Image (cartoon, rainbow, N blue to C red):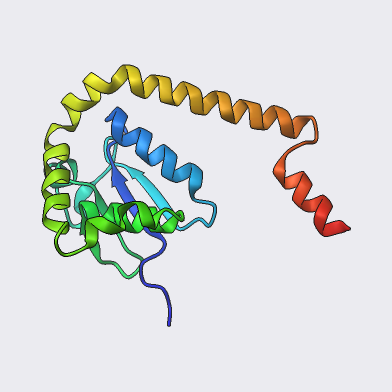
Length: 158
């Protein structure tokens, strides 16, 4: 049976620092290419092409499954986390007793995300800088011949 979920297209607001940070983390972990990312704040983005409006897409994270089904909110995050091997993190949000709380919490966050992003901007910048430093360190290690891909290749050649 064919997988009808992936690739999963995530429609997110890159102008929201917290949202962008989360999508950057998912993108970095998506080694299987199961996720696609579409910035709804990009010039020329047309939500009508996806059967939605700018207000609706701005209000909640949207995700388009491979079968054409549009999802919204926490369900999109559950599938995205599962795609990158972190499904266990959000799995409890799908459990019957917790689902209404998770959905309400996400709707509250989504409504207030711009204010939250403004307040969290210094922390977001620190996290981004730390990620950039780690990436630079990995690149330098690879340049010295010590990256994981080189070690994996060496093992398979022996």
